[in-house]
Image (cartoon, rainbow, N blue to C red; front, side, top):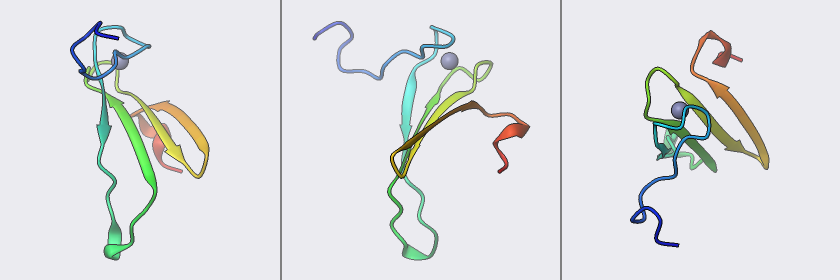
Amino acid sequence: MSENCGCYPKCQKCGTGDLVPLSDFSNNAVSIRYKAWACTNKECRFFIVLRGGDVYYGQATAESAR
Ligand SMILES: [Zn+2]
C-alpha cells in the first residue's frame, strides 16, 4: 500500500499522467453529488465522471457536449 506515496492513481489509458479529482462545481449554491477524475496528461485527456451511480468515461473532445 505504499507503492506511490499516497499520490494520485496513474491514468490507466496513457500510463504517464495522473488521475486527479476535480472538485465539484456548484451552480446556484446547489451542492451536486458529482465527482470527476481527469488525466493530467493533456495529450491523453481521459476523464471519468461519476454521476448518480453511473460511470462515464471519455476524453475531453467534442464528444463531451451532451
Ligand atoms: Zn491519461
